[in-house]
Every structure is written in C-alpha cells, then in structure tokens.
Image (tube, rainbow, N blue to C red; front, top):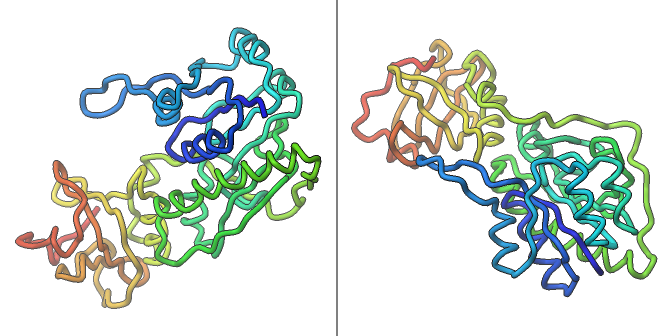
Length: 307
C-alpha cells in the first residue's frame, strides 16, 4: 500500500522497519524536528528520522501540521497514514487526507491508558497486563474505533523500559497484519467500550521525586515506571541519587521514612511509610547506573536519611 508514516522515538522504529520489510510503498516519513540532546545540547535527529534516512525514505520534520505540511501530505497522496508516538495531534484536515484513513499503534489495551504515557502508567498502576491496540484515528485523544488488539502479561518486576521493548516489536507485527486485512476488506472496526477509560498523563521530573511517606509497594512501582525516564530520585547529603530499580520488602522496623536501614550486597534498604524499599540499581551524581550492592561499597550510608 502507499503509506505515510508518522513517528518519533525508538518505540516507533520497529513499526517502520516492519512496514518497509513487508514491501509497502512508504512515500514519506513525518517526525518531530531535531532537538538539542546530550551534554553538548547539539541538535539531534529523532530515532525515526535516522532510521528513515538509512532506509532511503523521504523525511519531513514540520513543527506543526499546519497548511504547509498538509499540502505536502496531499501531494504525497497516501492510501493510509500510520501513526505511532508521533508527538503531534492530527487535525481533522490531516485525518481526511489518506483515502483509507489514519491508523494508530497505541501501547495499551484501549480504552485503558489513553494519552501520552500508557506504558509507564500501566507499570505505575500495577496492571497485570498491557498490550497493543491498532485503532482508526478520529479527532479525539485515542478515542477511535479499535481494529486489532493483542495482550501482553506484565510481571511484577517489569520496568517501563522492559515493557517498552516488548510492546514495540509487537506493534510492528500488528500493523503489518492490520494493513494486510485492510487490503482484503477483512478489518472490522469495534467501538471502544464506554467503561474502563483511564488517562495516562505525561510524566514529569517533579513527580519522580520520591515521597518516603508512601507505602513501599507504591514507590517500587513508581521507580520501575520511571525507568528509563524521568527516573525516580531523592536527595542525600545534598546529592541527588537516582533510583533505576527497586522492590518492596519487609524489615523497616520503627525507622522513620527515608532512613537507610541497611546497605549491603542485596542493595539499599530504605524505610517507607509502610514497609521498606529495596533499591537494587541506583546512580550517584557524575556516575553511571550500578547494581546497588556494587554502588554502596565503601559508602557509609546506613542510618542516613533521604529527603
């Protein structure tokens, strides 16, 4: 089929690869403009832009889908526009351009977790499953009819990074299947259920600061949900310590929330409002993320309090 692809981050790259490998005619790839990145804050193209260029595809980076970008889309005349984690809302004028509509690869089991951060919010909430929904886009936020859906179980230890890496190739496989069915006229639509809708608001650095008065089980889910970004953190002796992985355990005793109860080969055990958080991977300023047992060697931290 004659396609336009719209996506920006790593999550979208396997779908682009799958569509290209399936032989579809990808006449244009739309992605976010280059952004400053790294310590030098140099402009860097998105993962989708880099992959599209490597595949020899035409790349477009409009900051908004206004009249000029819409004119480009009309000239490309796609049958279908495939959208995955693009980062821009598609106005109705854009939705109307592809003759067979716009299909979205969404990283949740709709209508649960509509919005910007479905993967992280599923982990944060302790959901037992996630998945991919292929939906036909309309003017609402992830409100269109569902075309295909596949479930994926979540383990209690799974981080958002791990769920991301499991869902991304699944989205690529499902969109190829969806387009094959669409070509055959065998892709029925199903309206999203009226019940069970939740909104996955965008993650922020502010909410990543740990509130030690919360139960350890809640904090463990948040630590895993904020890996790889924005990464949970707390301050100790004026330093910002980042937490990459953790689980809830017993053994806080009567220690005040935030107190380091133990620091050994098992990790960093920190008292919470209920139970203790066993941090198994952390990062100190200027260093890299390390297994906590390795990071605490020679660090006189037991008895200190995070704030």
